[in-house]
Length: 260
Ligand SMILES: *[C@@H]1O[C@H](CO)[C@@H](O)[C@H](O)[C@H]1NC(C)=O
Image (cartoon, rainbow, N blue to C red; front, side):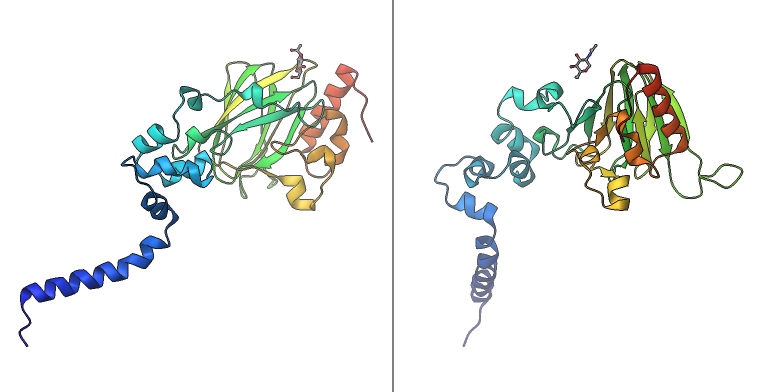
């Protein structure tokens, strides 16, 4: 039998088509486009699958497809922090997170942010961001900022060095990725800050809960875990002496009774 070059080419073509077929069919994205009769970009069909905007953006071939098919409204590019405020877990305040889930336009950008609202003596308890460095910018009032960067950042006496600062309006401080940090409002008025994050899914881990596995309502909000300074005793053992004393002083100054 003559086995010509043309035969070989058609056999090869058949084989590659056959082996590629199952892979294409098991791919939802390709399946979605296969069911389409329109010539529109495949991403146009992702919404019909009930996927979140974030997931649709991830599956878009290009940024142009994501903008044209998913981020179709100009308002998709606006995040209204105050509209997302829930009132927080109590008088302490709350942290409102703009990440790729709450603000899908951030998907693929590598950045996120949070707005911090702390009431009088309010306390954003010690936490880490596992995937981001944070740049805090103080808007109104002030915060006492504490950061423990990592092991071996010590004082001369060998104990951990706490990077403690008071941040005033139009001042910034930086929290390194993975550092344990906290903010408390030392005044009897509100404190508001904006915090840029170097990841669209920066994540937050509250040290006290992670260490002790506590689900105490005072320290179990969805984001940020801001508590009323009056509940400071509940964090005894998981916060620095400096911060504990500062909160106590604030409670006294503002006439806020401590809860036991
Ligand atoms: C402080 O913040 C709370 C909660 O956001 C708000 O209800 C209150 O009006 C604020 N107070 C002032 C003086 O801005």
